Amino acid sequence: SAVISQKPSRDICQRGTSLTIQCQVDSQVTMMFWYRQQPGQSLTLIATANQGSEATYESGFVIDKFPISRPNLTFSTLTVSNMSPEDSSIYLCSVGLETQYFGPGTRLLVL
Amino acid sequence: QKEVEQDPGPLSVPEGAIVSLNCTYSNSAFQYFMWYRQYSRKGPELLMYTYSSGNKEDGRFTAQVDKSSKYISLFIRDSQPSDSATYLCAMGLYSSASKIIFGSGTRLSIRP
Image 1 (cartoon, helix red, strand yellow):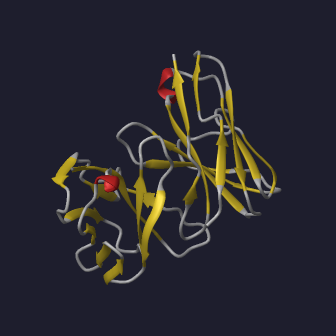
Image 2: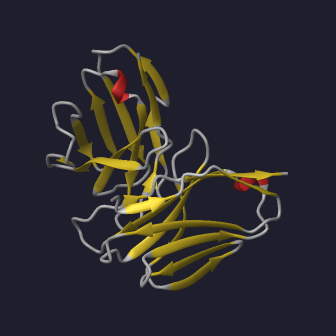
Image 3: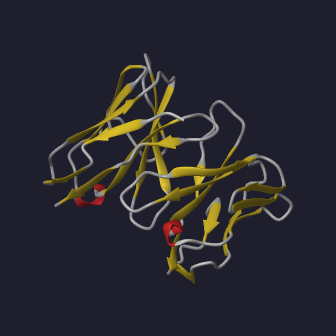
């Protein structure tokens, strides 16, 4: 399985600001995924990021709010824009097709 | 109705007990099934993966799938305090455009 790292591991932000989360994989992968995990809730897929193309967003998530970059086959970023307290969550990146392997997550608290 | 239902717990059992964790699902098209373990402040870790009805065993863990009842289970034998974590079921379709659907997770605590 791939080894995945995320930065930052946690952050506390003020409403109205933006935070960019980085995801690094130790091997080249075609597809990377970004999830949100709110307290007591299941993982929700935000978007799928393929290298060289626009990210594909799930219903309820839009590019203006969650812009994603995928500059190469081992790296991706997710930006949470114009944050509100409702964006407080754990953000996870993952790789894999049938099975997903996850990074350690970024814990975000918006005040 | 959610596609995947999982009792959130918390579930607390004594060390050495057999633990049973369960999920039900509504979409009969799901073809493969997984269990993830998530320790506090960590990402989910894949525990078990199966794509057919029946049992799959790996050490102290057994995954059971009953497609006719749309019901999956994870059994943990000889439970240890180190098994204390949140367990998430997940399931998916064999499709390049498919996504995995996760249960909300069951929080398990093993008492020494």
